[in-house]
Image (cartoon, rainbow, N blue to C red):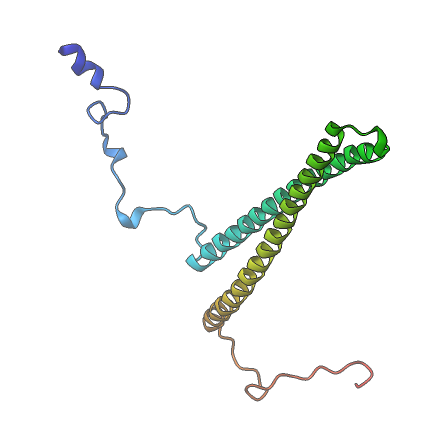
Length: 179
């Protein structure tokens, strides 16, 4: 029994942990953040959003590459089968055996099946592109609204003194020829 108790006191277990005064959690006002003191929550959210967007782009690219690889393999197989079929078809009909004719038919069926598979793959890729286009459109609208809000917030924080020009009037820049 005593051995069982000793074995329960392993490294990191609550019973063997000795708390020191210096290891006590710091009060809330003494907490130091890893973030730069000039970094705001909006900046962090923007950075996280950018990272998420990059991740989505990479996932899309990975999917696109998988489709390309599948397409490449299907095309290779179709080409190989066409060569096999060409050798069988090049034989004169008089010299063909029943096995040759059956093999021709099997190759034609396999080619047909692979072509259907490739057609399905192409349709799937097109569907994915349309879906991605719709996602991009929604994302652009979201970014536009977010940008407008964050721009207004930042503009409110950085109010500049009005210039001597009339409010809402921007100076007209003239080309050197006009001056």
